Length: 555
Image (cartoon, rainbow, N blue to C red; front, side, top):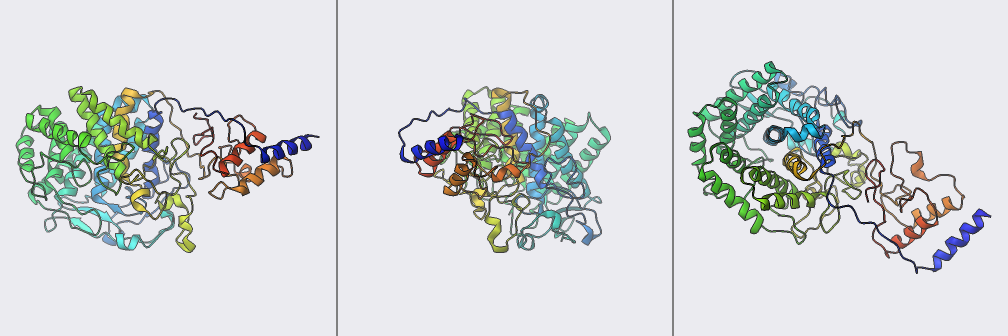
């Protein structure tokens, strides 16, 4: 009797489309506290070394590259993979640790209140433990492990990439590297400031090495050896950044004329750095220096530099039709996030509400306030990229083009590169400009999110403690093939008619999203079938329910 009634209901729906669907709108604002936690968690996916699996959110990550440095008779295991690849580049790694350390230094109350301090400190110490290894003796600092040309021919898990790796570059008397030495010095100084009340001995060691690296860069000025990746265009900004934080740590006024001396040099474009239209990034720390020095000294030249840059970003820079300040096609969101962090830090100094509003608009854009209604922070919300350019999360190899499949593992907290200048995003693992993720992308994003959380967020959201191990399947994708089509509709129909006892995803213990319950009422019935059919016929473009990665309804 039940089957007959259901069959009549379905038959009726197949010939009728005159009904109304009520969509629930998402509540105003975003859960910034959760987004902040996710953005820190991402770093676990890029951990390297024998302890990579320790204190790691992701169950699919473990020890890797345990013999790094052996080709030079050293232990250089540890640190972080750069992006979707497994190289350990010195410049973006030092930049990431420096900016993350700055975020913790300025917003520790936020990290404390959201339960994220311990995790961020653990991440920072994984950085600085590696930096200390890279300085085996005075006057010698190793700043890269692996070679980009070799590494990029491999697509697979880092745990399976065994054997010794090259260590191509070193800074010493014969090889200047003021840029990477300056950034690393700043990262170590901030670790001293953030850790001195936790482990004074470790903090003091970080400060000692920070001072020696700064002296190396200062006494032998020059660019680090240029490879095919992360070409450095300036080192004066990095030395100024290092000196700024040594001044903070030691309150030694002798650093101030040195900073002024570095900033008197024009940029590689022949322009004064005080009229800078770029933003904070691994190759340009001028704005970070100006922001901190404006706070420390109150000097008008630093204030003018900040006002010039922020006015350009807020009023003149190319903006996508849906609101993103678009500096560059490669990793647009990293730049907007970094500028948002600077804007919030400068807001703390000036109280200018327009800075806070600007920063929030850019972070909200990344979290879903865009024409694609997509969160560019993976795992946040219900619509986010499925094809991040990240080997470990992808879970496939190059064989047969399998790496183009939706990633096997959920790369929680990774900020993708983002859209083009028209706001268009292509979720394709091979389009690096859009789908690449990297440790430097997330650094400024963490800082900006901490500031936004302070003013707009819920400071009591508890962070998750383990990887939910969800796969990349959306509501409606019942057969788990990465698309929603008539096959899914047939499976739902057979399930409702009790021709089959369960749906394919029900065998997956780690999949918490109720894929077939597309209206979120807790049942799978004719209402869900009706909505599925209208979706496939493109009468509707979305379902009236969204789930987070734990299966909770978010609208």
